[in-house]
Length: 254
Ligand code: NAD
Image 1 (cartoon, rainbow, N blue to C red):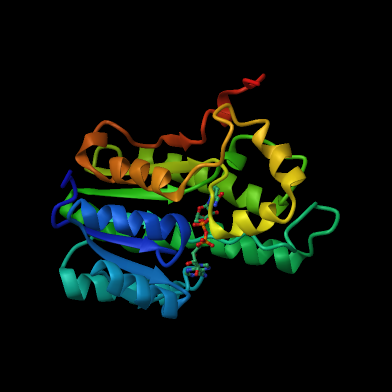
Image 2 (cartoon, helix red, strand yellow):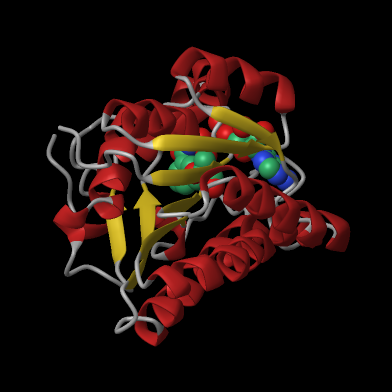
């Protein structure tokens, strides 16, 4: 499928995990992709592997985001797709009883303020063109509570979901669609490292997933490509769950 032929797409956090899988998918569907990532070494590597452009960006910093979007406009003249995906999940964000205000704020800045900044920077260009698709990465924890808390992460993703819904509704008649994607637990290097060491912790989570497995980054990328494309022309302000049935489940199959 070449649903994204010649579309200009920005992927924040495109150097790793879900962002990298989406880069691969977007390129295979014909898009011109910009990888905006903090980790410029990895961003340059994946950009050269997939024929994309890498721009060093700190999504939590307004000047850095504005400079990145300015460079994309200078280079391509437009932005058709913004996948606001960069996020962190650090170990010092834990139970509310143990999480410091610094740790709380760092996660809010990278996961939620970043989505505000990136949407604010691309929207004027999309509104002027009367078209565009923004996809913001939330998470299943925006919808479900976990006793294994990462309190700031969860709150940040709830914020991403609410912000996305509001932007989707506000701009619904402008040609610009704004949707959230909510992945379930995905088999990224981080998750593998966490659970390979501790199968009991993995099992505690797997029992809640009807499909009985973690998702793959490519499965999230396929859903993002759909939301980015005209196939999703009647979708905006939605929470698109890619979670193996997790949020729909009470009792899962044996
Ligand atoms: P990852 O750690 O593999 O990739 C995240 C990327 O974001 C990295 O390339 C990193 O360099 C970049 N990044 C971090 N801070 C940045 C900053 N300040 N500025 C620019 N780039 C920055 O993570 P992933 O697992 O692919 O997750 C991607 C998104 O999906 C995140 O928003 C995450 O919260 C969300 N998510 C992941 C899962 C999962 O199970 N992996 C589940 C639900 C939601």
